Image (cartoon, rainbow, N blue to C red; front, side):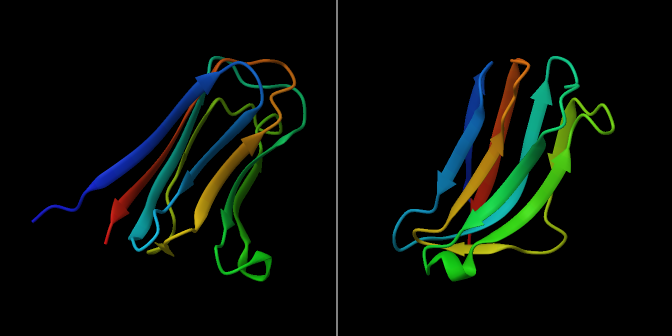
Length: 113
């Protein structure tokens, strides 16, 4: 039996501000977050992936952070090192200021457990 996979996809040229929230009563596993830019940024800005825990800010966690300009990165494919289980109301937030207005595509992928 295969698990159900859910994806949030966003694109644009402004600030990257994507989020995916687990529906109430459900349990998901974070599978991956990907980002593609049409060109690497040159302004020092951190691309971040954050857990916004439904249990409260005491449980929020920065999962990944990378200054994309520091190494001229135009693509990120982040996968948790191990299972990262989420419950109803938990959210994964992805952010990047994108001062230079790069065209981006970002996807957050989760699977039901």
